[in-house]
Amino acid sequence: MKKILIASLVNGALGCTLAPVAAVAQSSVTLYGLIDEGVNYTSNTGGHSNVQMQSGFAQGSRWGLKGADDLGSGTKAIFQLENGFDVNSGKLDQSGRMFGRQAYVGLSSQQLGTLTMGRQYDSVVDYLAPLTANGSWAGYMLSHPYDNDNTDNSFRLNNSVKYTSNTYGGITFGGLYGFSNQAGGFANNRSYSFGAQYVGAAVTVAAAYMQINNPGGTAGGSLSTDDTDFFAGRQQVWGAGLNYRMGPTTLGAVYSHTTLNNATGSVYVGSFANAASSLKFDNFEVNAKYQFTKAAYVGAMYNYTIAHFNSNAGDSKPKYHQFGLMVDYTLSTRTDVYAQGMYLHASGGGPVAAPLNTAYITGADAPSSSANQALARVGIRHTF
Image (cartoon, rainbow, N blue to C red; front, side):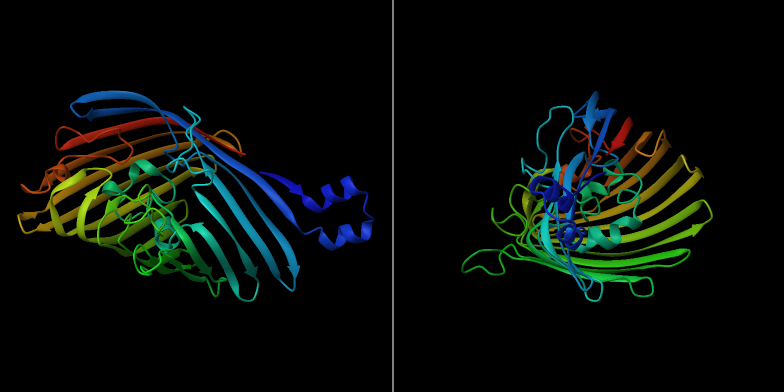
């Protein structure tokens, strides 16, 4: 990361004396970034195999600015602006937003915690996701089907106010509220979430909840039309997880539940043939990571998901088995190379939600034409 001391720049440009420089020397801005690039092989996308160069799988490619201004008495004004982009084309991610990953400003206090406002991550991402494989060491490819619980932060929440506590005895907690920004529709496309995490010597435990009313229902709401994964009357996500560390080994177990009431479609599987009175996902994940040396680790995960599609025309109950693996080797403090793979098998189902009965790995360019799909990747990641 490149740190620029704002006070020093001002002093050099204006010729200020040493006294005022010392008074503002704690103000700083940091430029940072990450580039993730690689080659993917997909076994079946619409009936054909495919080899592609794709960016942002282990982590999304990005650059950003963050800074702090010391206000005294343990209080700082803070901000962060983070851009997401595709390395292969140079285009903006997150539907073309300049700072689509994060954009917020706020206050941080050593006594009271942190309050921020802007486009931000929800509490499921903040507290529960770090206990999953995809939310910690693996990334995009090892997400639960359709990233239905947002543990891979497929979307962020606009117009949001978020509070994050300081850490007390290993416990951190917080919550977020996203405004609809709609006159006469205060609850239309608003969101709220809250969560907590405990980090001990060997154990990490977390739980979180999120609700969005009419996600994607309006362009200017908390979850805008071009940012949502599912279109529904209401989206709820909740879950809990545990990580246990034994020397170089970390074992994890996570459960999450997603409910979508009056679901009408998904960006992944298109419009449903019949509007669902409810669409539910129950995700059961176990994962393990072994750190061979400071420079190398291997991680594996298995996830079992049961989906429930209920409508007046009939019910479907597809199931998904996912097996994921990743090996990573660090070349330097800023650069690493990795290989990862995912196999997904879909089973069960029914006549109503036909698109949900086929295999689709998050990150593949299209669903499989069958119940099976495999995706493999070799990549390089560089941070600055």
